[in-house]
Image 1 (cartoon, rainbow, N blue to C red):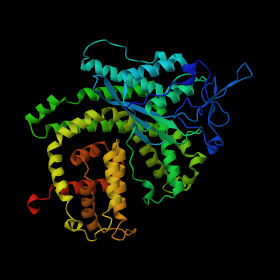
Image 2 (image 1 turned 180 degrees about the vertical axis):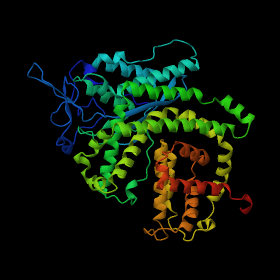
Image 3 (image 1 turned 90 degrees about the vertical axis):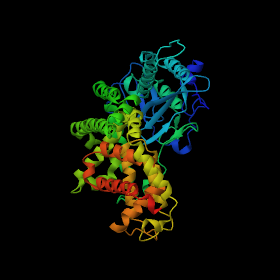
Image 4 (image 1 turned 120 degrees about the horizontal axis):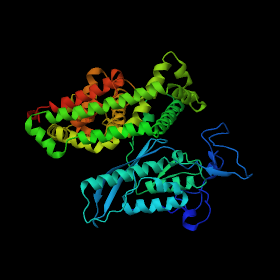
Length: 508
């Protein structure tokens, strides 16, 4: 079922903008706690950031009255991509919209949308903000059958329109009804903000959440709960900063050109079959070459932002909201700590901008190149999953069956969209395994016990296409991070996959 977003009240009735607690919005009325929360307010008209109180734009106005724009319920960093199209039972084209919220690190699939839904949303928003009519939008073409080129062009225009709409608070002059347009768009994408403060994200029940279900809070990484929360908020703040960097026309154009170039270089299904006929391993070499090019591009932009915007990054990290991390950043290893945090946060957003639009094409190449390897190992994993723990030569059998580690591999590696988040889940699972023994205490497993236990957890997690996954993570990983614990734990994961591949069928 398709949930259509509610029409903005001022556009529907020709009246003034209603408050966010009104029934016209999908957001619930604010609670007593949210009423006391200081909501960011922007004043119209405004010029770029001027010194004032809190998060506000202010500029003198001839009249005594000043329009106030409540922006607390507006999401400040929504990354949107249209990943796929399909035809429903009525021969209508449907669009699969993928959304990532930089403020909460939440990803989901919006309710299925049709071209008519996009048109209705655009028309309603134009009534509130006429400048939206200048955004690129596909024209209606009355043809019985659209060619693949026309379908691709329409998809790209719709995606461009959605991305412009998500950045409307940065691209257009401030006006009183701008917040209403942004909240209407959020309803279209399947999300709302809780209360006036907007500090909690609510997804509609028609959306499909793609988030990991395991909690990193259970992992003992040396951070207190307060430090862990501050680190998560700082990472999200840096991502919002990078999000705005990609709104610069020059950076946006460079990224768009690169994505378009790589798409044209990815072989079609017919070309992949031709490569396989010419020689064994040629398709794998072609896939590795494409992934290597993507990795070098992401690394170059990552280095450019880290080096060129270092002062801004340090200024963001020095905010009082992250004061609990001050001791770590001011310590003898503080510079390394900050550098790793900056690089990881920036790289995560770069994968949003570069890898996600290429994910479908890349997955097709990887699946075809490693399909025989994955079919063989999947057969072995299915057979091994029926074996008891004693079959894996574990020194100590775990009463819970390492359920927490298996859950991390299933949810973190299996459901995450970004390669960096899959890699992070492998590290978290390995660390959790090292701290788990037969009594579920924090005593470390011995080195000889670690690999058999990891093999067992990988088998029980039943990760899909593990060979293609290893190639993806190996080629797209940050080279600097691979020199530390990330590289060690990922090598252990690769060793576990290799160990499963080498299991002789005769022993079963």
